[in-house]
Image 1 (tube, helix red, strand yellow):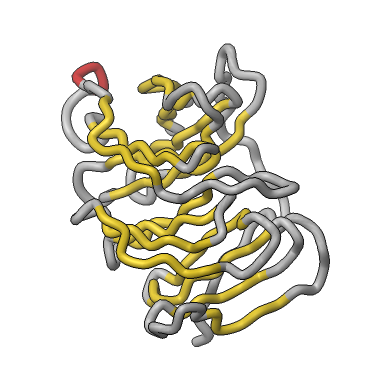
Image 2 (cartoon, rainbow, N blue to C red):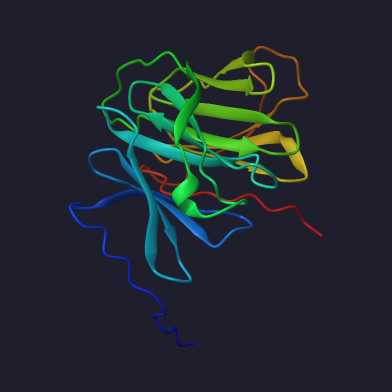
Length: 217
C-alpha cells in the first residue's frame, strides 16, 4: 500500500494544527491553529478561501452543520462555549462575497476541573439535528440546535474528562464517549434512566484519541 502526496497547505503564521474537519460534500477543509485561528481551504486548489478568529481561548472541537444546504461551522472552546459561524459562502457565488459571522452562541457544558483537560468535544447528528457535547464536564449533554435548547444531560460517572464523542449516522441514539483514562462508554439515549450507560470497556489507562462506531451488517 503506497500513498501519494497530492497537496500541501502552508498555513502562514500558525505553529501547529489543533483541529481539522473535511466538509462532507464540498472540497473544503476547516483547520484551527493553536491560537483559535480558523481557516477554510479548497483542497483542490490548495488555497485558503477564508480566515477568521474564533475567540481568545483554545478551540478544541469543530463540526460542519447543515452541510447539505447552507453550511455552518460550529466551533467549541476550552471554556465550554460553542459558536456557530455562518456566511461561509461554500455553495453559492464567489468566495469574495462571503461575510463570515456568528449566527449563534451558547454554553454547551458546565466546565469542571480534571487532572487532564480536553476542553469541549462535540459530535453533530444531522439525522436528528442534535449536537452531543462532553469534555471537561460531568455530563454528556444533548442540544437541539433547531430550538437552541438543551434537551438532556446524562452523568458520565467518571473521574476523567471525555476526549471523544461519536455517533452512528443511522443510530444517533447511541453515543460513544472515550475518556482520558482509557475508558469507553456507550450511552443509549432511548433509555430514560438517569444513567443510561449501555456498555463499558476499559482495556488501558491511556488517552482515547479517536473512536468510530460501526453497525454490524
